[in-house]
Image 1 (cartoon, helix red, strand yellow):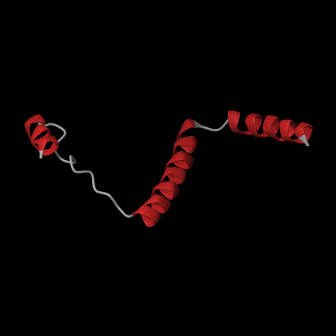
Image 2 (cartoon, one colour; image 1 turned 45 degrees about the horizontal axis):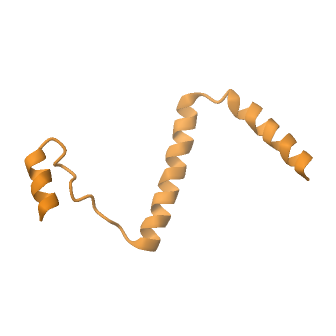
Length: 66
């Protein structure tokens, strides 16, 4: 069993070694989207309270102190 797993891992590693980075990025984005959707479904959607304030530090400080 362990030998078969090692062989499978070696095959997968070799197969993905030639994968272009842009394809890898698409795959990772899809996986992240799936995980995010499942988390939002289970725990509800949470909005980022500081969104839009990234360049206005006084607003960020006021939000954090409230």
